[in-house]
Length: 144
Image 1: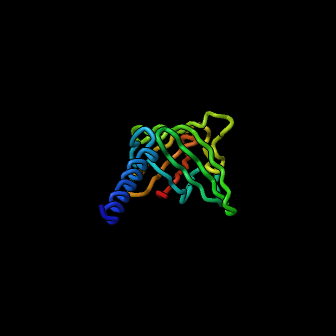
Image 2: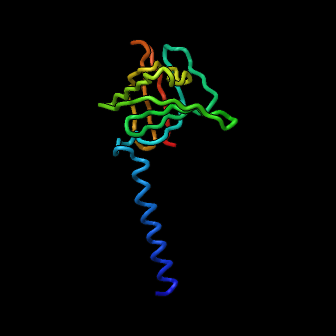
Image 3: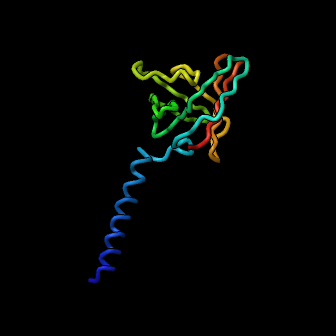
């Protein structure tokens, strides 16, 4: 066999190995819909509720039934905490029940919360949380 054929076969085998490993790493236990992946917070708007201010980059990430909330600081450090989530009928339920890994207070949410999904798709996620019947917090995320 010529060197060219051997190189082509070796390259093809390497590509097959790499491509077969990628989907299994990112989709732990299957497809969870368009919420999958990492989202960066673009804004928090409140109504009849105190303003929530933040000066760091805030992210949410979803995989399988796990939600990660990450706060990134200018010095390249970050703090991540993990909880569980479910998404059913435009209701996102989050649960950070482990007291060793509480919810990040920068988001202004309790450790267990139900948020209404106002938009999910085209790279945008908009959620509404109602701390009281007459107040709301709207979170706008973009796909990272």
